[in-house]
Amino acid sequence: MLFRTGPFLTRLESSLPQLTDTLDLLYGGRPLEPNDQLIDFHIQVRRRPGLRGRLRPQAVFSTDMDTPFYPFPLDQAYPLFEWGLNYCIAMQSHQYLMLHSAVLEKNGKVLLLPAPPGSGKSTLCAALSYRGWRLLSDEFGLLRPDSGEIEPLPRPIPLKNRSIDVFKAFEPAAIVGPTYPGTRKGDVAHVHPGKEALRRWREAARPAWVVFPQFDPDATTRLHDFAKGRAFLKLSGNAFNYPLQGRRGFHAVNRIIRECSTWYLPFRTLDEAVGVLDELATNPPNA
Amino acid sequence: MATHWHAPLIEHFSRTCWNDEYFLFNPASGYTHVLNQLSIDIIDLLGESPCGTPDILSHMIETWRVEADERTGFAQRIEEHLHQLNYLGLISDGTFDDTLLIPDSLT
Image 1 (cartoon, rainbow over the protein chains, first blue to last red):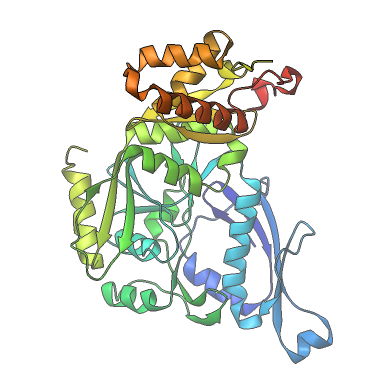
Image 2 (image 1 turned 45 degrees about the vertical axis):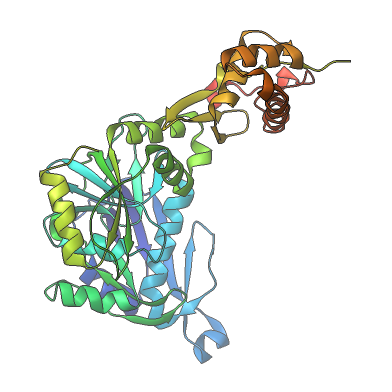
């Protein structure tokens, strides 16, 4: 199977219905790809062979003769594939400065949401993608250092544990894949990235806002100024390949900090956070 | 022999300043350092010409308008900054081997 995720073309070999059925659901609406292009990633997800594989069914991920992960239970083949694709991108895509950030676009301007696990970043990202923001990526901000634009990488958004039900209550009509209980990251389910995001995968855009979100049930949801120096440190420190980029990585981050307003957003509910960010996009305050 | 400080890599550094903090990228190490104004003043002074600790101190006392009763503590700060900057590879005490410089094309 050939399929595109943003700038990357992947050839996936797998006959596991646990993987391919979910892939069809969560990448449904993606453009068809002609068969004569250069492939970025060659991935196989196969059932583990031999006696152990029969006693305890497992899925094995491999790429270019490399098997970077221990086998997963067979019914977790889909999350294994998604994490494996993350691995391929992180290890090979150094033409980009890879920011660890959710990325969305509205009116031609990009919102960066860099945040560590547990901050509610992915849940907020999924919520925004169903409220008029175009998803560019939930995990990788693929920044072209020469142009300063972010390249779209629309893929399903992984939600974990309690955030799965929170999001389903927020957007009951959303396409959400099966919940995989007890993975290495807890319970995981994936949200469809949206047909609009898949269709517009070529449309890069420039960052305008950097917002560090933090879910806090006791917070008053509002934007706070975030010092640009601290934003520089957090953005560069969390980029996957900042040290490898050398001088151009330094200048790329500096350009983002110079051109964007930088904020901290503690939020109590998804509705409130979406409202604040919509307001930021339509009527930006002076930073 | 008195230490003769210099900043042989200064032309290769990239820098920016946000909120009174300087962010300086050193391509020789690949590290980005966060520096205060005094550190930057020392690096810039040594970038102009190498000099010893007493010359650095007298220059900084003038630049920073340090009062007479504060000069002992200030001298200690200068010493600490020099050794820290040397440790980070941003200045050198004279033992620097410039053949270790990596070409700009690789950074």
